[in-house]
Image (cartoon, rainbow, N blue to C red):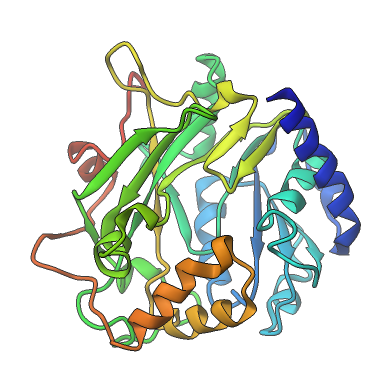
Length: 328
């Protein structure tokens, strides 16, 4: 595992040569700042609310990698003092699906910081997020000597066709996509890295109904007190050293955990699925996006009679999808 970790760090250094700084405000980062790292392509429509949401939670600085956007993303972010931006047109797949670029940025700029790694369509929630900023969570984690914090990815979707309501820039996507699956999840232990492996939800139910074991993983560890020796090895599903993946209890009880509300399923989803399929830059020869594109041609609805309308984090805790653990 030590060799794997060093290999990942070496890859990150090598792939850093593909990054061109567009706006470097990293000198503004102070010692206690909470950082957010994100790789994206053509997500300008989502950025206004994304930035508003995470600034509201208490994120101090954003480190973005833009992978060849042509929708005005770069121009939109320029001039924001809490944003540092790099651009590359290199292969997303050959950069470990963006992980190499982000590992490099965290190694260089995030040592000693709490870092949140999310996609533009993911919204991090945690216990008491409606009344406490994210710094309250990270302070508690520091005091408890906890270095990593997990969050289950929960796909949210609208009632009706995905393209029925048009999403507007700056809009809270939960105004449109506010239903989710409360059950039908499977969980197992990955023996290699010691992380949990979770699958299910509407993507397994609709897009991978005939092969649920091929459905996307929903387990993530998006919040980490970063050290330059750390490295993600599989998206944000697993890290090295292995101990960072022990985000669950083995002797009874529960560890605190959060959730990532995944707002992929808006009216923009169909075009995005076909674009990413054509680019062929995703895992397993873009098998996930192939399933999306094929199903979208049939105009599927993700809502079903067992769907739950999202209310708040307490609802997810009652359903067993996240936990406040012993954080009171």
